[in-house]
Image (tube, rainbow, N blue to C red):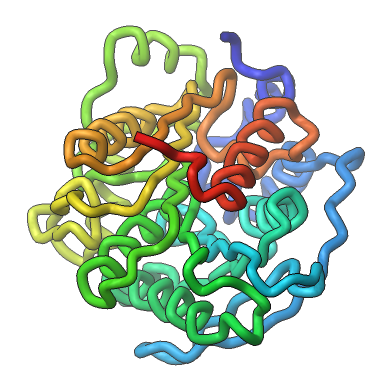
Length: 320
């Protein structure tokens, strides 16, 4: 399927931008970025939102809690992590805020969005991993105050956030003996070295602007920076494809069609299935990496959010 017009129609805006880093960080491209990210017709869902701080081993972890006032005491909860290559992103970005609002509304759930520490200025794994664990444990300990069912807490994230969610799920399984209800793994990075694409997949990627591609040197840089050392030092909590996946919680893997990181998501889903875990893998057609930064009014985005909501609300939605 061709790249969705909601994205491809905006590609000409980026012709003058030399890199994704420049688009995100260089003030000279602030107007271009604002135009590219503008969706004035999208109505952000109105749900309750409050800020909190969670105690963690490296200091307080800021979170936003969505959907508390919806009522009920047995509701599901999702602890959600945004993406950004482990070096960027915040609670205000659409992938964090819009996604949390949409899922709180669609699933009738509480969503805890985590402002984990980024791997800048000497911060490396396991610091962001520990922040995520602290948020999940806080949600479990605060279940009565949050009006949620402590046995229905799922973890999830997008891109780098999906990696952190998967690592947390494994750690909760191994250390706490209490795996999460589900893992939501959206266009994530499971491997310290990204698997090669198939020929058909590589051909599709010719249609994607360079700014939206992740060449090996880019993923290698991000992964080394995340670890604070060579990728050979990685363990399964840092990159879950290295872990023993037996006994992993039921997992939903969402991959974007036009994303070279899809190869990691596909291989991770296959490894989960081989380990006997319940896993459902869905390729979101016509979408690029980062599609949860787009409005839910765009068909494939809304469908992906509905699928996540179904998994959160229906324990048997993922079956082997």
